[in-house]
Image 1 (spheres, one colour):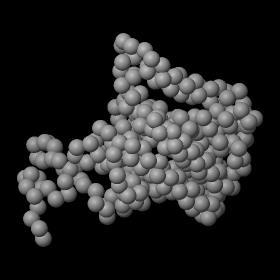
Image 2 (cartoon, rainbow, N blue to C red):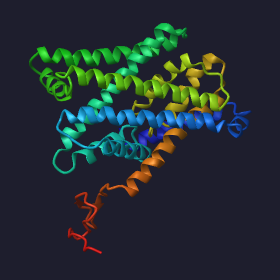
Image 3 (spheres, rainbow, N blue to C red):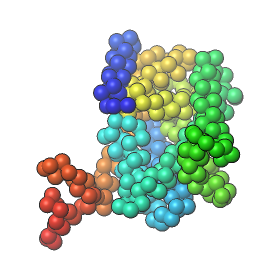
Image 4 (spheres, rainbow, N blue to C red):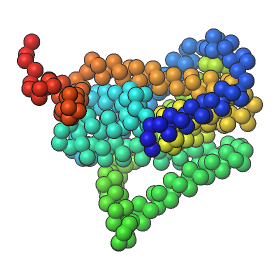
Length: 320
């Protein structure tokens, strides 16, 4: 989906919220923000990113990528930065694959990123389904969870079924499944990766709960086990720029059963996004100060390979 329709989608959703929401008392909550709780939310998110780097390193190692954990952590943070710049919420994943693969192994690197992302999403959906079984929820919320759970189950089932079928489109699905089956033959790695994904998502749940506490909102921790997965999954739907508008609208709708009005709900969503923004700014510092190549384009709009030491004339820069 192109940028313009996404931008329109974000503007429409944000416009509706700005028009219909009651923002009385929001400024007082913002001024009274408990910084310690918000910093705790940021710490939870950075811890989740660290574990995500460990998870990605395990999957990439199955494809022969051997790098220090610090290198993977740096790429994860840089990916957070590019998530803020690119129009999709997975734009940073492409950047991660680009830098891991270098100039010769970008396809395997992107596969490792895709496998990493899918593992996390499946655990996210499973967490939402489990929470829906034990947390008293309105019927329509359970319906949302059921839709995502059914979609994940059908997608996973088709990939598994493709390994036993022939002909189109099964052949393409089988190739895709084979490419993603990085750890299928190594039960230890697959189990460890899945456990890491579970801890990552639990930290993300704590993030949302801590943001609510920072704003003085009474959002039960149990409810966050549904709120965080559903809002996160909604932002993956390609109808907005980086989930803007979708994140806010989803938060408003899912907090309404708790008696939280639209104004405070939007504020929670924005404070939640501020955590991502802070992590993205940290990623920007890593990108600018680290050893990351920059892609250049010459005057004729011809691509120049990503090399920090290459000038626009395609000659190596002279040593200073």
